[in-house]
Picture 1 (spheres, rainbow, N blue to C red):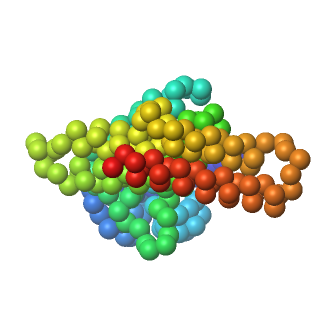
Picture 2 (cartoon, rainbow, N blue to C red):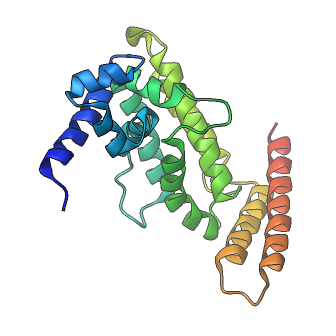
Length: 238
């Protein structure tokens, strides 16, 4: 059983780091220890390193805007809800958000990106299997998150009294239109892409009499078909 004093010191470190990041601090170890009133060994015991503490704070920040839609709800509505909560969290905590998503190293994903993608995949993988997506679920999640983060950082950089919230809605709907078949109906190419995506999802997750190599090959071929159909649909829409 955890010692309450240990839990208290861990919480003090999280609160101190969150407050310092929210204030735009560079978050030196000395500042964190002083604000939390703990010693360095306590920080290393709980988080392993200062970066471990920063990652834990990032996870805490992500948890504040996890979509609350119930399982089985309309995937479009769930993605819209998650997008809007993400933007609002960034606008409510601009310095903290900028630290979460702006303080990255080349080739090293920020601590919050993986969990954010995993959360979207819970929504998008069933949608792909049901034939609602014109690209595979992971590609869709990556594109949606990239657009969501970009819009949020752009809005944070705008003067508050001139902030263009229509930008968020316009980009959100454009991304959904490029991702969900039902959101941009009327294209046979897009529906063909959705069928290929759904079949690829079934091949990879279904109990089929295929070897892993055969599943991988079929999945790759179906992904290529979906990509070509989506590209054709985009070209004809221009």
